[in-house]
Image 1 (cartoon, rainbow over the protein chains, first blue to last red):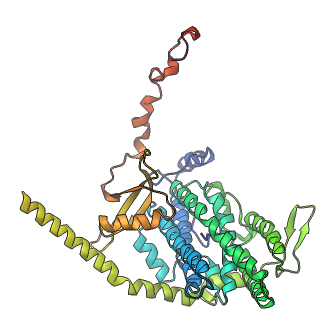
Image 2 (tube, rainbow over the protein chains, first blue to last red; image 1 turned 30 degrees about the vertical axis):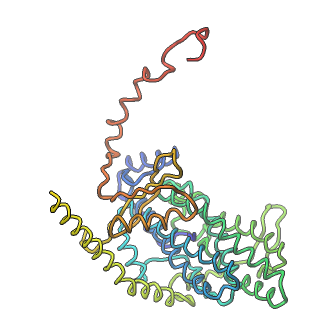
Image 3 (cartoon, rainbow over the protein chains, first blue to last red; image 1 turned 120 degrees about the horizontal axis):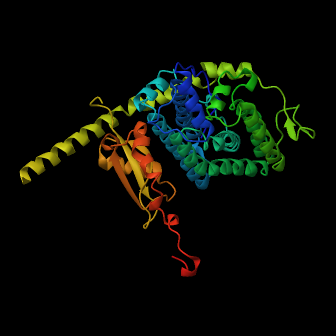
Length: 331
Length: 95
């Protein structure tokens, strides 16, 4: 559900100009690239990195929300949140399997995440302090993710595009349930309304950062656009998100935490204030409030699940041996 | 593949009777029973299917994209395999 502007992929290639030109021609004619097709190494590496980051984001993204499952205010909210977190686990798995078609193994990707080498969306390094944060995440974080993911349904690599189609179909419920939580709080008591406003204040800017650095500062945007891995630039998507979200906040009587935010009649878009990129890079580089906690939680889950993986393999081996013995006895 | 790696399975789902099973992705599972269970959890959370097939990815034999022309090009010039190749007078009616 949560992809972000790509962080630090190496998209250099060493193929012959003829090969690259033929590949570009396929891309330009909107031919999809499938796993066994010849492709530039840079294309393969960029996709492995991008799909991997996306998959890790889904998996780590289960943590901030999982934090509230046992404390959801009603049974309805609890059931919805459980389903949403389960979806995120599923989305992570669709994406890992799409990445695996490019020749990277699931074990490798998991190892990179657990060792802190792989990136995931910076948004999950913020804490979920109140129930309203669950509303804000669904509405804003999933909303930003959908903005990013809809064009990815047409990305040039077939398995990624197909995974994104499934993800997008399921994601719409995530955003709607989040907005509904915010709406109910915003129409509740003064205290509830303040809680919703506080969540919006804390999640708005990090949500805008999810789209990644400005186009002028993004090193990999151009090549990804040429290869049609991405269809819109970071800034284009961010603007679309702002334009879509501001009226939604107004509708429920919440105020965006941005004094510079105003409708620009001439551009036909909202203008918004400067983003704190120092904060973005701090969080990306591991200095966010929750970076250590997130990786610690993933490591704990991995280590404590080791016996399950071993038991499953042992059970499978035992069943195979028994089937084999039965077959030989029957012959 | 090392012995303690959990194998990969391709998942095929029949959305409803009357349609064929269609590939939808893959999952890791230790054996076929767990593969079916995992496929059900991962790929059918919203009534997507009536039936699931799982096949070990290692057991799939695929054509090489490099052979694409050799394999599929010959059909392109056999226009006589298509009904539109034959001229039938309009008077004959729909055929």
